[in-house]
Amino acid sequence: MVRPYAVKGQKRKKNKTERYDKEEEENQGFVEELEEDNGTKKKKLKSVVTESDEDKDKAEAAAEELAGIPVNLNDKQQQGDNKNGQGVIFILEKAFLEVAKVGKSYQLLNSEDHANFLKKNNRNLAEYRPDISHQAILNILDSPLNKAGKLKALYVRTEKGVLIEIKPHVRIPRTFKRFAGIMLQLLQKLSISAVGKREKLLRVIKNPVTQYLPVNSRKIGLVSHSSEKLVDMHDYVATLDNDATLVFVVGAMAHGKIESDYIEDFISISGYPLSAAYCITRITNALERKHKIV
Image (tube, rainbow, N blue to C red; front, side, top):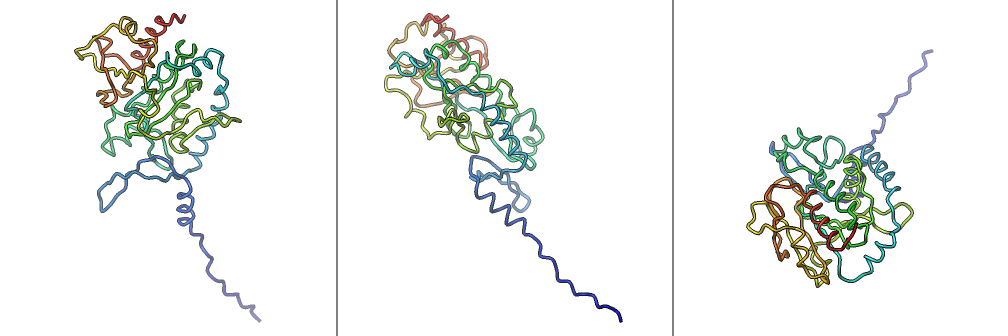
């Protein structure tokens, strides 16, 4: 007698798409994607972020770097923060810090690593230079002016209008790769805190930036070398009021100029084109000489 075979039912397939969509709704941040609609590409600003395994690895790598960020101010920085007036604030305008989905993961776009992606999506390669912001931030935070407690605040506003606050006592990573990882995490999670502390060292805040500036502040914008008002930086800061908080607005882009309504005075500090990092160096050197900071 032949044993009859049992009739097997069809296996139930897992709906991976539904699970993917469910996870996608749980994570929010600032990203921009390109979608295809009837053969044409459309640009859409999304408020959801899918965190792949590669994204998690990058986030963990960034978190490891955060463990080395100091949260204790030195005595001079504490005195500078608590002191009214006599300080300086830097604002970096039009910083190209943009996150997009490249392949299966979200990355901070730059012209060197994502040239093919940018060309495919009709983007200008010359504009995607987050390294300019990296160098400028390092020059500000590494200056003796900051270590002496004269830096009151540092703000970065991206080309897309996202406003970021960076605490003066943050130790930003020296390598661009780790800096890109932290900026990626910041734009997705909206804030970064030191390990074991509640203080948010980097965070996304609401616009406009003017609501965070002191009432007695003087807003100074740096423009192209072709400007009519060419000044010697040492002579210029010597004439400024000692009781006012100086706000310097510097463009963090490769080309173009800053245009902001809140700037009271536009100046040029050299007859030659200078990088944002070197412009900041000239400003900090002049202020250090004025305050006799060695």
